[in-house]
Image (cartoon, rainbow, N blue to C red):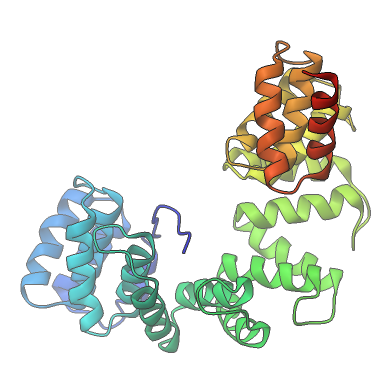
Length: 318
């Protein structure tokens, strides 16, 4: 299971603290305010009393290196104690650690089990990640109906990853009737919360005029926001805009830079376009060796243009 580095919003802690005791409330409040030294002290005290929220907060601190040195093993230990006490947030976070193999032996089976427990308790993040797994067929097998059930529940709670996933379902017609209007609505909601995939998807819809009036300027703004977060697809589209000069002055140097960022993340389209720039010496120095390496990588992912370019190079003996 492909899980990126864990990052958990501090604000989520306060949701768990309704009717909390003083020590627990102080622990969560200090953490939420970013006072990590005080949070470490108050949460450690509350944890000694067996408090589930304090264990959860300490897990987040060690998992993200907030006020302490990052230590996934300690994070996993604290999350385990909190999860065993029924804390759904800790169950979700611990599932992320098992999925990534951080601080624990990697186990998709344990991760999915923890996500299911947390989702059953109504944890929106767990519903979103589990719904995404059912949508992609990753580990649990593809099930559009189950994905829709989980993602809708999470989206109703305002979870941006779930909103983006629902947008994808309506955009592609996966398990639902294709509906660009609904896709745009979900993408807009998630993009407003700076979800990078949603920004990119919404950008493509405005760029091509799918379900909305075509607006290249807005598309460019969305692509830039998403690309700045490291989204490879947004970097690819941004590269295309710079390469073609669509709505902005043509800039092959910037095109090469964006394609390079995306290609380094194994984006086949960017690998092909960057290879072409290397072959022509546009925006970068001419380098046939780099071009061939990029074309081989792109072709290996099934890019037909890259395969044809390689065949031409081979025929010319280059």
